[in-house]
Length: 79
Image 1 (cartoon, rainbow, N blue to C red):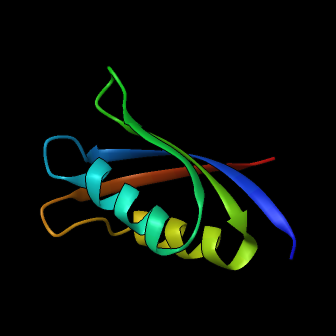
Image 2: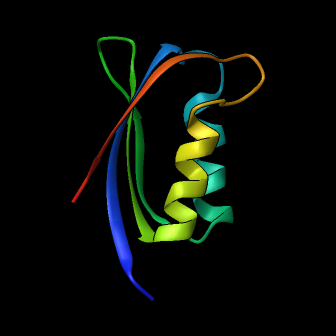
Image 3: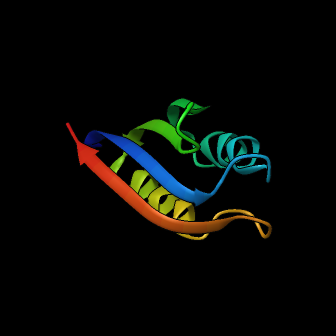
């Protein structure tokens, strides 16, 4: 299994709406490692590491987020 790592920055209405907690639940559900944190600029930052398929799944999820979030943009950097 090829492992990849993605650094992701999500902007929009993504703080105070459960985005970080919901994303962390998806990290566990998809068997990934990494972290999710709120930034001072109102964005959410995450690093996901795991199978290509599951990293891509969580990035797709980040483009939508939990019901009360309003995602404007998702920047992804692979390493």
